[in-house]
Length: 334
Image 1: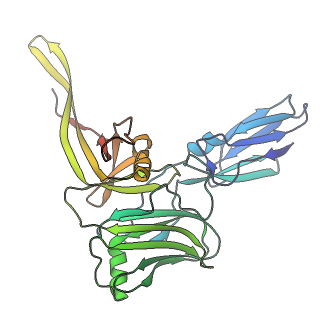
Image 2: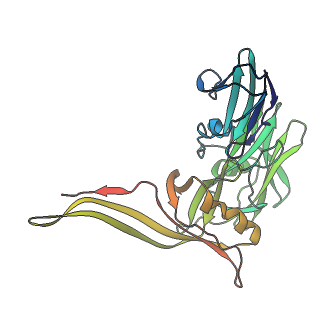
Image 3: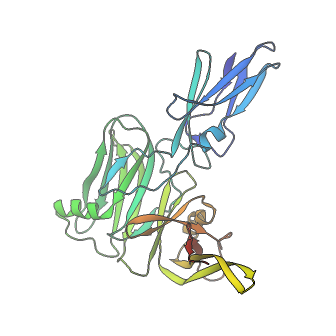
């Protein structure tokens, strides 16, 4: 037998990922599927009677994905667990491996793994993530500021950078590093750029940020994006918030009794008026399999109830999202 076709590196685990095997018609083919570490067999396929077999490895990757947001105390490069899964197949002495991701398409080196617009709003008490795929060597993150004079300040470096990496941008740490370099303040309205480059100064990704004032009315969300990573966006205010109660009752001889009481908190939040590119990007929130609300510095899972997003209209467009906490409160009952 022989493997004549195999999924490319960083293919999607949500598309077909075909391993094609050729064999003689009288040959029994036993194909083992291994876990991310490549040490434990998690599945086995047996074939006989044909000269070619197709095995879809996508589910093998899907069932091992665990895409979660990062939370660091400083600007740093992180190798995220659960966002890129090694899929290994073996038959006798023959073994092949690839990497599958939680994105909607194949991801490539030297691209920003997000559909976010070039400029995002961010306050100095928030954080963000920039994911890239590196091909070895060193990698560096710099912040570029223009006011009052142009300067480039190093935020983080990593040697032996290989595979999927996430640069965790912690704005409080960025401000500290700018202050040490002589940049005393980041004023609202000021723009900065974060650049990820390799040891040869080749730019892997860039993201621009517009500084905004922190607001007690704003609501920051993060979600599993279309390329299998985590994106962040701050909705500018909450339109409404309410508790929805659900009670289970029985009619007993002495009247109705509550046998279960569940409370869900729902909220409707809205963005600023945004352009069409941002609308397209934010539409991912409605379809994302995982969404979090950032509360008190921690991501809290929420369930997004919207099933559609308005993309255009006669008026300037805002995105509004209705969501509820993922875990309802179970209250007292009789």
